[in-house]
Image (cartoon, rainbow, N blue to C red; front, side, top):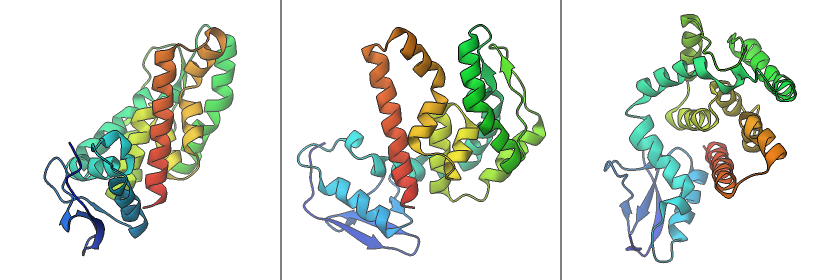
Length: 229
């Protein structure tokens, strides 16, 4: 879509801040008015709209895209997404260790065990690890703990945690990220330890390098969004 507006402004509302194009509030694809909770975030989204020269490209507007995700996906589907995240702990990437590469298994233990320990100490989540790909389970109490940790979060905070957990394959890393125990690069290097290890052995093909760069960049965008809430 071509740029169709001249002015981009920020408007204060009773529930947050709206970004307006020629005095009309921006609406999401689901036709909801997009609001963000802080002025600094609203001004950052405003800058993304102002930077458009000709074509509106959502991939060049990561903060706005995250705000839309919260508006159209997180807020109306909050309970379903919380249930989804609670189920993620069964398949959390940190729980699955190499059963045949002892060097990789040692690296996984060194990097991942501290975060499973953090989850138990800080959150009450005890998640045993396993060697190989056979599924391991977490009891209903663990799922309830995850839901209890998610419940007090405002929708934008929840959206950040959800995106990090789904990008990384780890609810534990999502919780640590939301609790500001980990930064974007830390999450990437921890979650993608296996891939980075294989890269060190065999090199990285162009497609994998591009995908990994995109994931790292998106994690940084989520961190920027969260910092401005």
